[in-house]
Structures are given as structure tokens and as C-alpha cells.
Length: 376
Figure 1 (tube, rainbow, N blue to C red):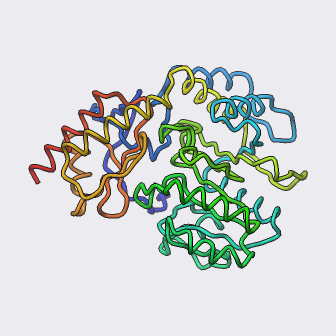
Figure 2: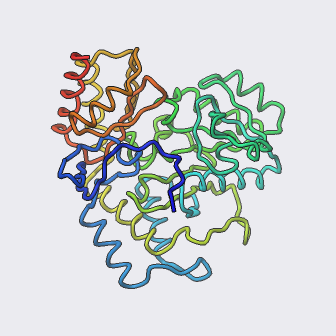
Figure 3: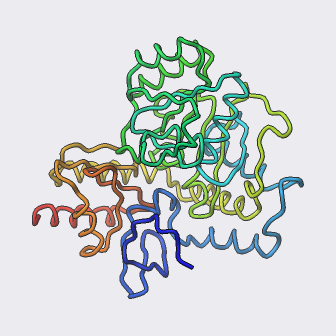
């Protein structure tokens, strides 16, 4: 049997990973500045993470959500403490796309409306409603098109008010920082106005923090730079450091009913063990502050030393836009310098490293990119 051929693959076979490094089957060592697409938050194979999951598996690995799992409440409590959102409720699921699907469902239940507003260059997932709210027609199938989604310009308050004033929108969804779209940061005043308009017209505000959350921006959630209080926050990726887990944070105004949401695997024992380990390491090693400090240093270093068109980012979520296409530079970084990076579009190099990235490791990247840019 063949694998369904939908991925463009680098000819690399990772066999070991630790901290910010990956080793392949030929013994090559790579610096990971992509974090498996922002998933690796506390570093590869962190000892506490490994111990937490291993010890849990020896006790019980899975049972359904028809029984009490005390670790779910423990995870909710620690998440509330570290994020500062302890008055919100937590629904656990398996992925970011699933988190957004449940957020849309909650918004529709709560408002009685069916329309969604998203923004240009948005990416919210690949399941039915999530992909319909993603601004990429290539991955939206005809079966997804029945969802009522309107895309508006980023950071445009007037366009939002014109649309919400019709009072038929269940929810506005926006990323804390657009990742796939190019590391685009919503203006703080725009987020504040967005929340005011949503409240004025009875629309719920969903913050998609799947990529930008869990300390990556230098705050627990990127929207917290603006001081707003969204109705719903979705998360995944760095939440499990590689173990599949997603979550929805739900404001007290939205009431739960039995059977409203559900999942077979969401919030299972192993997922909770992974999620707890991540939060414990983040707190113990102060990784949110570390991400902010290292990110600021890296941004300044890139600004001073690398020729570019535009530099965008917060914490350890950074986009370097160049005038030229950068696929060859990304490939050279990987093949010649053994450094993993990401890409947005054709011109933006995207950095999403583990939050444990050191100053020395960031210097290694900047020096390697400088050499490649100057030799090209």
C-alpha cells in the first residue's frame, strides 16, 4: 500500500530529538527553528515531559469521557493560573481545527446565527467550517462552501462595522498573530475596536491562538498585548509539545448544556499528562519570559544584520519578508547549515522555534542566514 501523496517532503529521516536539536538517520544534527510547525514548546524530549507521559501510561492510558478524569480539572486549573484566565471554562479536544469547529458551534448555539466573519490571509484549519474560514481557495472543497463566511481586510474597523451592523454574524474569528498568512500582527487598537463592535452587535469574538498561544509571543496568548477579553479562545500546537491535544476556553457568559459538545479522544489521560507537563515546565523554567527576551534579541539581530523587506513578529514567532523568493534560501539553510525553518507564501521565512531557544542558538541562525544572503 502506498501513502496518499499530499505532502512535499524533505529527504530527511529524523530519529532523535532533544531540546532545540534533531538528528537524522545519517547522524546529521539540525537546529530546529520551526518546532514542527510551532508545536514543540518546551523543547524536544524534555525529561519531565517524558516522565509524565511514561508514568501515566503505566497506570491508565485511555477511557472515554463517560467517567471522571481528575487530570482534566487539574489541567484546567493550571492553565487558568498561568494564562490569567481562570474564570473561563475549558473544553478539551484533539487539534486546532477541531477547537475552531467547536468554537463556531458554540457561537452559533449562543447567538442563534450562522454567519462567520474571518480575515484576509487567515488560516483556521482543514476541517469543514475551519477550512471555510481559511482564506485559501485551493484547500476549500465544494462541500465546505455551504458555510456562510465573509472575509474582511485585516485591521479595517470600518469594514467590520459595516458587516456586523447587519446583526446576522454569529462570530468574528481572528488569529492572535497570523501565522500561515505571513506573521501579521493585528493592531492593538483594532482588537480593542473589534471587541467593542462584537459586543455592540451581539456577535461573539473568537481568538485563534493555536499557533500564537502558549507563550510563543512573549505573553501566554498574543491577544493579551491588547488587554481585551475574547468570548472564546482556541488553542492546540504548543499545548501538548507533540502529543495531539486542543482546547477551547469559553467565557462565563456562554452556558453549557449536556451533549452540546463531545469528543471520543479529547482530554484523554495521556493528553492531559502531556498538557500538564508543558504547563509545569513553562512555569518552572519561566519560558514565557524567555521567549520574549530571546525573541526581542533575535529580532534586533536580524534587523541589524540581515537585508530584508520587512520584519514582523513577537517573541519567538517571527516572519522575515524578502524582496526575492526564499525557497532556495530555506533549502540551503537546511542542507548546508542544518537549520530547519518555515515559510509563508513565497517571500517570508517563518521562525517558530521551541521556547527554550538560547541566545547562542539564535546567533547561529543569524550568522548562517547572513552568509547565505551575502553569497546568493
